[in-house]
Length: 147
Image 1 (cartoon, one colour):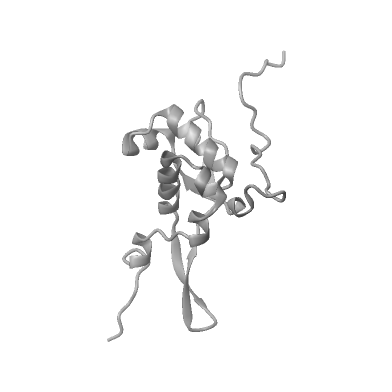
Image 2: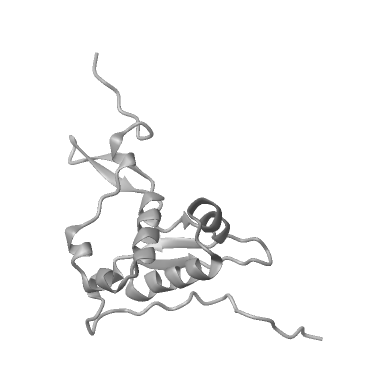
């Protein structure tokens, strides 16, 4: 009887694969040790599934690359990272092109930020590098009420 594979029990979900190009990149060399660790945690939060390619060959495809949640509370409780350390680390990962913020969170309304894994790091240090820009639509700070 043929063996059935489940994405949940599959060994691929237990692995974090990193491109050799990534660890040799200028962007990776710019990171602090904490930023490297946090980036690996982000990579570990990716979810995927096996999909058929060309009829027979199966390929592992990530399905949530732009829907990764990682809260300040989780960083503090699970990984012992203070809020300011986590904030600086995420900011560094955004600046060198490893992450993008897809949706800004809000402490006031308890909204979680959604992060996306980015490949902007491949052009870091080059003229064609696209610097990170905060998503429009969410204002930071207090606003005067309209009376």
